[in-house]
Image (cartoon, rainbow, N blue to C red; front, side, top):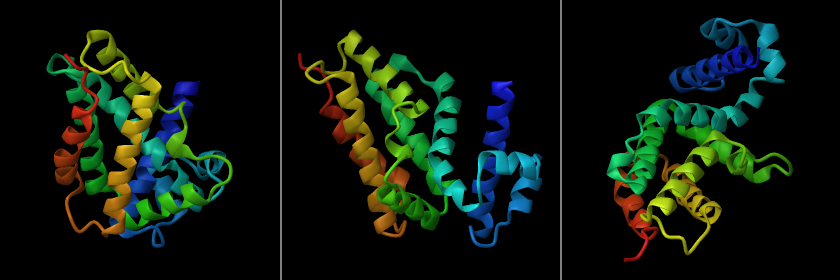
Length: 195
């Protein structure tokens, strides 16, 4: 039952963000989201109080991307390469499917919330997968053990959020994925084990 429930929520979130990207948040209606997701209004309102509540679902969409990417990870190229691949693919998805104004709203919402902050929720697939990769890299001797895996994941997430925030500040005037391919290797090189 839970898998079906997650699938329904996932379809609603995916449909909503596709419509937001194509026609804008303000022009998208709940009816259009329900129609594209092939769900019902009851299902929509089971998961979301309103269309505005969908802004907080962006982290859910990101986690769905990580679930999709996990089986394609190639650890033979190294664990830092696997982290770099995740960043590159997520940023390509964001650049090609997420309206920058909505991404900016999402960040503003995260900053102003007193309770839940989805970006730093350690129960997310994002944290589970990146912590797994870092842990494997530490066991293998590729990633430093001078910091805990949790601390490394926190720094990695911090770097990604900084790149996204900067991209929003500049109104998307440059390619997020291309710029990350310059910055992330510099950051990741600092995580290599010495010797």
